[in-house]
Image (cartoon, rainbow, N blue to C red):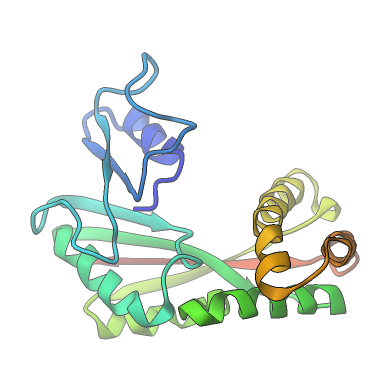
Length: 219
């Protein structure tokens, strides 16, 4: 679920050629679109919305993986999401959710300001990426007996290659939201650019880390 470019699902299909792998998202990525000579025959993309009924029968899959949809799902809808993922999972099958959003580090003034901007953007839609640590009890209450693991991912050049890659990811998100900061929150281009540089500096100065939560459970 939320397959994005399809890269993860395609790599799974290549790693496990005996499996049939389905990538599901609202629309197919422009990056990996349709069948190409490098696309494994055991991979297929289907349009689907986890907030609605997915295009699969009950108990179809042995393993369901969903990640990084916290910014697209209103927090009040997570019970519906859990139940729908359980519906398409076979008895004895597994569900794995991977979500991030909560900091494991102290926040400086620039990061705190960015957090306030993001909350202002998301709150009208009921989305709260900073509450994702509460997902485990929500999953439990809706039928998924899951284990939670937390991985603290370093952000910034201070931690080498992993931190640099993670920084690139977060900056790509920041840049994609820049028009919304300006249009919906009335923040000037100069303010956005200044905060961008300040946040990058704080990531390094504070040895900033972002918590990634992995929830895994068997039906």
